[in-house]
Length: 238
Image (cartoon, rainbow, N blue to C red):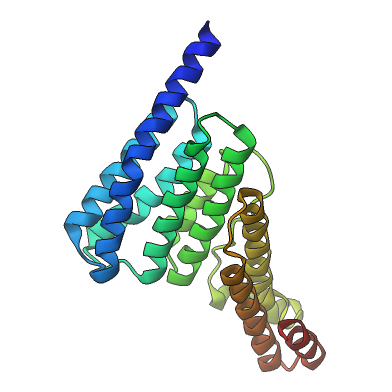
């Protein structure tokens, strides 16, 4: 009886979330035209906040964490009154789509829910690294604990200046400088594997990002006069 009651609550929650998705996507469409449209940002923030809170109440912790990442991004935009970049809007759109896909199944699936969070966490971390958003990276570490495993690699927030000092002191020229790019490729591979799990046709974009990451690594290797490594990476990038 208790199990049946919980399943009914989860089912009701899924229906509630599915009613939010069109509103979120409508707001995102407006933001694509004007990334600083604060009314739309506030409304989308409210909807993701509702998804987060209700998910927690029905013990869908990973789904709650997924919504919390989007909520955090919107909350920062509201505080600073800064425009959302195309990459941020794309992140929010992808998050809405994946949440919709999960809820559309109408049944709780712990593994799929964890995979969803893992993919969104990796994408969120990538944005934070690009923007040097330390608060966002700190949130990544907090949310990663919900997964309870070691399959998400949270970036080291040491500054590039500090990393260069470590490299110079240790004599391992280029090792630390290339590590962050290698981690980026690993995150993209993880994201691609999750895309396969969900049967989504977004491999082209992810593969392009992987190619860019490898090319960036090759360029860094050339700067450090690591010719063999640079040649190897150029071959991979094609």
